[in-house]
Image (cartoon, rainbow, N blue to C red; front, side, top):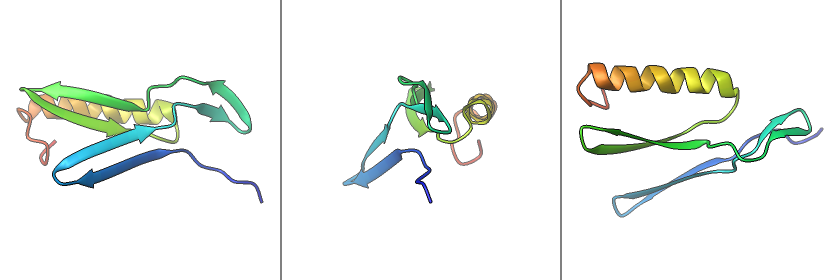
Length: 81
């Protein structure tokens, strides 16, 4: 069996977080976009939030947009958003 997957990695240590992604979008074994931004920063009310996505790109961007909208509706309350 062949390997299948994508890379998003998050590490939290001493109150700091590092989030990285591989930046490659594939369809099967074909690279369709070599420079995707899988890690994004959202700034709301002076707070920085980082998020990473993997898998179906369209679905993830839809969820990200909904998350940003909920974040605005809840005045930046991350848990409620």
